[in-house]
Length: 181
Image 1 (cartoon, rainbow, N blue to C red):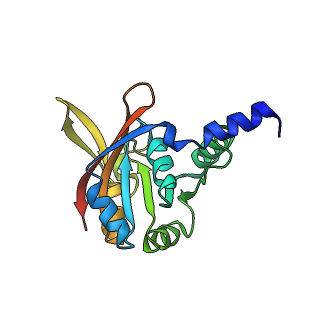
Image 2: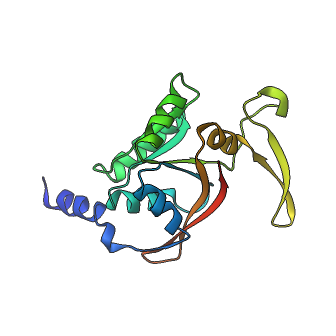
């Protein structure tokens, strides 16, 4: 390995170079310590990758639930940036996805999905989830009930998680229980 490549590789694996604080993670850690899997719902802000890297550094297994095309793009990007990162995705919309997710959770893993987007189409297009208009930060916003339905079917707690960048090398991971099924 060339010296520049070796330096870059060492930097990519230096989780200790980041100052990552957690708020509300005590319950999540307790469940994981008991071998219970936990579902996380995030959004397209902050850094889910900060949570994944921190969890990996602690030996926690993390899978992202996403549609296959998105999974392919994300995995290729993360593999280019951090080739030794342990990336795992569960492709939604495929046969066996629910069984794979149940197995992952039964084995004590974290499973996260970004839940701030809905599938295109009218609300009646599928019976699997509905889009609801709710007041959010003073304005109506559209939310899917899909993550709640998924957690209810699997009888798992669902936590909101956000990895907030605070500048420099600082992140704050925030966890908030949304529902416990």
